[in-house]
Image (cartoon, rainbow over all chains, first blue to last red; front, side, top):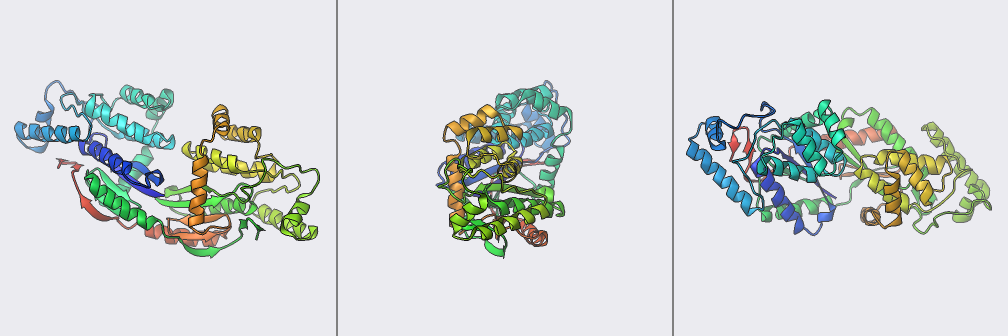
Length: 234
Length: 234
């Protein structure tokens, strides 16, 4: 079994592209059915409000204001992300995006992990935020998306009303900080190799091969106690 | 995060003891909330029938016949297991045991893993088989135990009727074979250190410390691609 830990945010265009590239690499990887992928929480903007009035500024204007560029530079950034997204099979609609805080979405991703639905919910969140203009910091949008992938709507609502899984989000973020992760997506293969950013499929396959070859050695036997075997219990 | 992979069978007295010892060690381990335990399938007797007529032979007589010992030696083996079990808080009732095939129980343990209920179901299976004399190779007993830990009875029944999760059981067993595992329980810490058999809590804590200290290093960064960070998307 090879483990891949991925830190990412749902409000992160390259994270969506990175997820698609990882899936493309796994589709070409001979041992894909022995690979386990887990997504971890990372907030690009922990101080973001739950939702934002998008009627005053275009996304390009907001980018320009946030990063101190011109509106044209902001638009060029958007065009590039849209174009790379399209090359990877995802339609990003920056004209629709309704920015918000992603902390609650991350809490639901921890619930989804326990239910075996994390990858599905992650994908659906990207689509909702980057493609469909859903206000993904708001409870109703979150519950609706969660129920679409098979989570129980009432359970999701109860979790959002309480502080369930908040500690898990904070723990993921603390781990990211301890690993020196400052940008996402960030992939760790077999606890050993880090890849920062969306990567070409060929690069992912190289690291998959390398990490896989190192998961196979027999663990060092460091102790022997009472066992049962085909010939009885020692 | 430190991963512990445990191979075991439910028809295995030392596996129950080993699970309890691991739990005792984790209760004393400072980073227990960052440890992930997964149980893997191992059948001590893959050729066992689904159930066995227990009216003719006592468990001691069956042990004696199977392993070519005297009935007294069989009873001594039982007494030792019962006594070690009691020392570890579990009541083994060999007078009640109804031997059977454990393949289907292992299939349900894979379902339980997906639902976050694996440890609970594993514990309940040990209790059912080694303590309560449940015929754990039979569908009704399996469904009943599964529903007690919160799995859906109809889903469990449907899984048992089909061959769902059979491949997962076989894969676990193939991995065990490739790791040279011939007796259970068998613990692998952080993919690196193997412990065969039920071990004293002190030994488990030593290996936990050692494996933990080695999970912390920052992964080697082997590639850098497109990322988003607090200052925008590169």
